[in-house]
Amino acid sequence: MAEVLLKNIKKIYTDNESRKKGRGKFRQQPKEGEEEKKVSLQITDEGVVAVQEFNLDIKDKEFIVLVGPSGCGKSTTLRMIAGLEEITSGELYIDGNLVNNVEPKDRDIAMVFQSYALYPHMTVYDNMAYSLKIKHVDKAEIDRKVREAAEILDITQYLDRKPKALSGGQRQRVAIGRAIVRNPKVLLMDEPLSNLDAKLRNQMRSEIIKLRKKINTTFVYVTHDQIEAMTLGDRIVVMKDGYIQQIGTPQEVFDHPANLFVSGFIGTPQMNYFDAELVIREGSYYVETKGISVKLAEDKQLRLKENDVKAQPVTLGVRPEHLTIAEEGINGQVEVSELMGSSLHLHMTVDGKDVICIVPTEGRKVNYDGKQLKLAFTGDVAHVFSREDQHNLEY
Image (cartoon, rainbow, N blue to C red):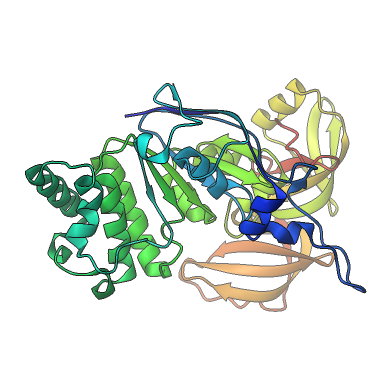
């Protein structure tokens, strides 16, 4: 289908654009007696910088997920690919062609919106067929494509209905069907599942995975939900404040977060953090915190040595599922115990900080509420981050 290449893409909203899009709040001054709120996006004399130095090479038929908190620039990036937002600077190529100034209708892309954007007065069939009709495609060809897409999405039985007679999940399938009948080079999806309840979201995620296997196109998917990112993407692009924080496969980003932000954003519950010291003894790296010392795993030793990392104060990160209850370790007190079926989530206090430990139940019922426990971890699951700039010292 198509490769998508973004080179040094930048988007700046001028004052006029900011006000139109509700971004005027970035220019507001605090009222008397109020503290000035921190501004996450960079503000320049030109305006608000929504996307900064964005470089990404999306391979043909790849499924890329842009993920990050609200306001990080992911939807703006998607809209620039679609041609719905003007690119301030940089170059955008689709299938090897520079498309910065190409109209959206001429880019051979299709987009699925969060709000479905279906025509309420049209049937499902007519909604799906509309884009082909205005291109004067042969009626028999339109019918074939609509019914083929409906079969893929399992909505054939709804073709004669109008959107108001459908559930949220069914409407979203229609919106996806309307996009894929065009056989686009690139399919863009802007938080398509955010309006659905949890059960429907899970179902639609699996439907999108199945869809991806049935149609040969390049997917660019935007979400703030890290579970969607981890389950759908071949690679995920983690964004914050208009900047790319990390690009990698879901497993790479989970196992080797590039910085403190990524480590906390990817993973549920989020990573635990401790003030610690990275020390070197007899040529090996150890991390020391709360009276315990843990030797880091060999692969971590090699990366730290390659980077010539010195002994220093660090932020130690350990995921909740990697903490275990032990006879010796970090002292903590259980404040709340949440039963999650096959495991318990123990919310603990360690030196005034919140820490979560996940303990498998293994069919046993144990009451940990109010108990003092000791927590341990091994050297292969410890992440050490710089106190100065929060980057992962291994990379």
